[in-house]
Image 1 (cartoon, rainbow, N blue to C red):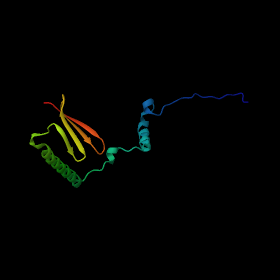
Image 2: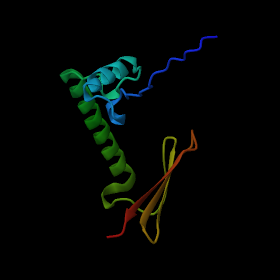
Image 3: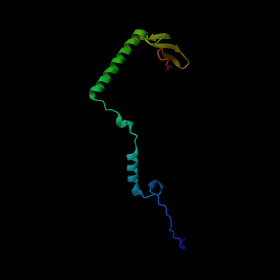
Image 4: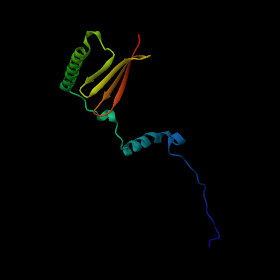
Length: 122
C-alpha cells in the first residue's frame, strides 16, 4: 500500500448553453440534434400541384357544384328546403324545424354515418 494519496479538484463545466455552458456550443449542439432527427416536416413533403392539376381540380369542383345545384332545384324547387324526408341515393335527409332553426339530419345508409346541420333562424 502506498503511503501517499493523490487527489485533485473535480470541476463540472456544463456544455449546453441552456444550462450555463459556453454559448459557442449552441450551433454545434443544434446541428448534432438535427442530424439525429429522423422526423420529417410534412409541409415540405407535400407535392406541389402543377397548373394543369390545379385546373383539373377546379373544373371538377365546378362540375360537382353545378350537379348538386341541379339536384337541389329538382328536389326542392325554387322555394327552398321544406319540412319532410328526402332520399338521395344512399343518403336519407330529414328536415324539420327546431328551436335553433331548420334542422337537417343526414344519414348515410351504407355506412351508418350521421351528420346534423342546423340553419339558424334569422
